[in-house]
Image (cartoon, rainbow, N blue to C red; front, side, top):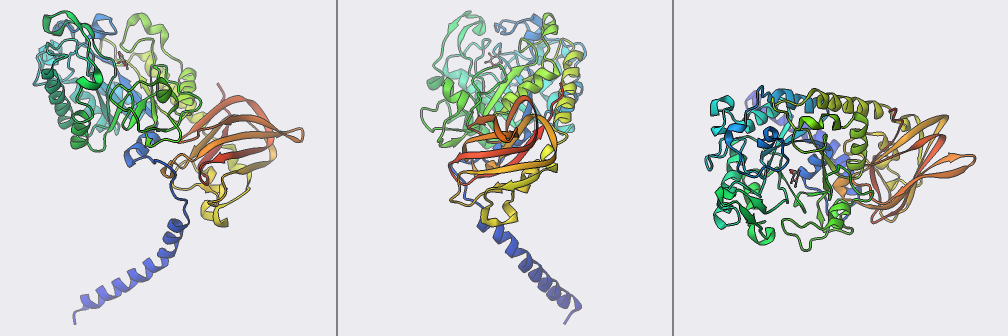
Length: 494
Ligand code: FUL
């Protein structure tokens, strides 16, 4: 026999002993965990919800014509940023805590920010970089080098294209989708805008063309299948989803109760049902959380006259609380100026927003609290309410299967002061809680801070400043036993 043989036998024996030792723990965690309730997020939806913050960049001929919607007749020569710098922009988003950037590769005016092989109406006929520039390339490269994700907006409505409204345009659109999905590395989100039809240049026809978005666009067969085929990890955004839905306004806020789920009925591209968009539906059949878009300025494109409208860090933090803090992503648009950079004021606001957010969430007061739960699943520390302190990860407080009403009391030896409450559900197991409240103890009685319905990925409540020695979280009703991953009390100083 060879020495290697003895070594391999010993190694195999050792591995068996080790895995036998670990197995009971793994089996225990799996066998004791609650069963998922209702629809649950896919792996890419989970990543997207955890990332929370994305940047939108509206850039194109409108930047130079000072318009919001270009007509499609703009001469390519108008596009000429004087000092384009993708790194300046992507770095500013990164410094602001954003995880990805979605670029308007083509807005309604039809001008393409990349040298598409299918049209002359693009950067290749502009004076910028002598016609050899590619904004999509530079922004996607900067994203990938700086550890940010890159996404695309490709407007279905094209006011330049001669065939818009006819079958030929659909081939053009699909070809462009393929170009963008195959030549610029991983794409984390495709943002399909619902704005459609109207007056336009249309190759010189200069007329009104109205389409029925549901029957005209080959949705979902064409677009969705192309995106799924070429970028399976990509989130598809449209008015209804399928991966996240438009939140129902362009103000960056979400309804107080916004479920991550919707019903699987009457869903077509451009399904704008304001209630469904704003609040989601419960019980739902599909996991389609909201995404809330808003611009840091009054308009989506850069206009010097709007320099005074740049939102402050406090305003951005308040939007974060009203979007991410209501189970949605926040998609914040910051438009490049005529140089092809973000203006200093916008950059400063992004940085200050991150500083304010970090300072607010720096100290969770429950870390020093004595924590008592009315029920702990199987009385097992795996599901203890102590896990509520953890900011992220795979731990959560859970109750026995039969227990759908429960509470946790947090108690301090010395009074604590807070004005912001943050609660998160363990969403890999679905959205379970239907009603809950948070109270504090004052003058020997419980006083209500807030009562609400949906938790989901995150629920944030900014209220008046409270000083107390006891706080109670009560789950009044849950569709299945609870699975809460985080609870936090913070003091936001403006
Ligand atoms: C809308 C568009 O019409 C706006 O110009 C902007 O792109 C916004 C994000 O979506 O539907």
